[in-house]
Image 1 (tube, each protein chain N blue to C red):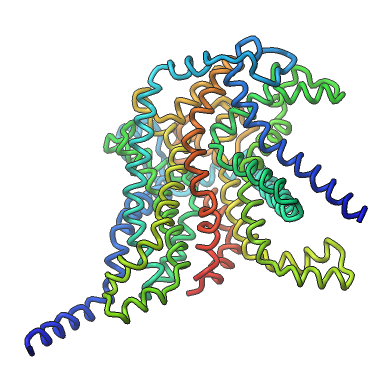
Image 2 (image 1 turned 120 degrees about the vertical axis):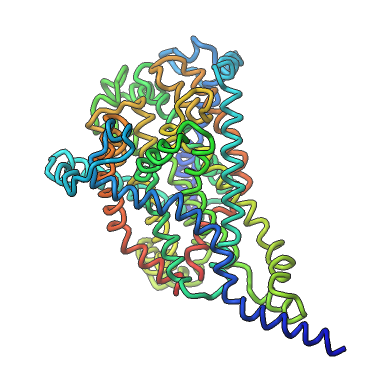
Length: 276
Length: 310
């Protein structure tokens, strides 16, 4: 009994440590965002943002091009997600539900392709887009995002579809439904949550990108929000309040969406790979 | 009465004849787009790596074929081997820490009471949800040399010389901070996924092993781990892929001008291409990076393919 209690205390102590390491940095960001200047630049940390201020948020939003960059981010993200989801759904259907020549090769390709780092492909992509005058254009960056969002979406959606028992569609077809009808009436409603999850996770992938936007978008009025945020941090050692307020603003949409789909992402990412 | 039946039969035969084409029709749009946005750049990348391609060629719109010269250049450059070793070491430490600590946290979650478990899971999810850029700014601020909370805590704990200590003066310490950022962001995914996987481990088996006198490590090694192995492999592969090509964390952490001591393959390739406009050489470095990554993950990918089946 005592030994058990000792274990329990140990586990809880470890849990508190994990909690501290994961949550404190986030708390520190939010708290710093609400602190007044002198409280941020104090050699003795002020643990609570009291008295607080909204000045940091005001100055972050008042930075040039903030609203424009929010708009750019939304256009880019929504376009990428819609295009890739439509294409990926059809392809995932083929990869999960049909037996055809080249299916194994397709699956190998989907796995291998996700290993090719975009950090390597950005060079030829930049040069090609430059040739056709599409650097510093939102269309160019949307096409570029498809290089990783599309394979990811196909792979994830395939995982979701594979997890839905095929017998359900077969039963519908025995009852006189066509194959297309079975997809529409049986599979589609069942996979709809998977579609939402894939869309949301693609959203997060694109929203969080830095490298591609940094390479492709040069003029301030074309930039996305990630570049706006990183432009803060270049002024080393100054304005931490603004940086933290900006970081919080940047994180909010990603966090909200992430909370929506977190459970499904775990099952999608791994289930897609272990089941066939 | 007869007519509709034959019409129906005729339609079914056409349908049957067209049926084998359906999967290809479904795949075609996605594959065409992938060929354009992924296949073509890959082909171009390899081509570029055999070319002299600088500012002059950028304006002309085409490079000059120089065969293996780019590769010769980098392979005979001792800096190349430093960067390769550094990249592999960096990825190995990140993956090792992520997987090791992630497993420990997953096991811890299982041993917690419900309220504490929910709390810790919520904390993990919160950290996981943070965009990379946000995470980098947070830790940059926490490690700020003047007003950073880390230096203050270390000084309070009695460590000498951490007030006004600049963590990025020494690459080894700088990398420690960068590894911390990478692991902090990657650990939640691993811990939560492994914890989900742990629910598949039959409790009776572990109990039986314990009754038979197995210690905690033996139970984990012989009962728990074999069940987790497929998930473990996938997580390790994904982590390797992600950590091998780390770019943003270093680039933004060091204010977009990291010194050469901080170059990993990704950063080096970027700075050769976009910093000093030697796109050909940058492409050659990128090709080497892709090949290394493929070699490192070959084993895992083969395992994964076995699991997926033909």
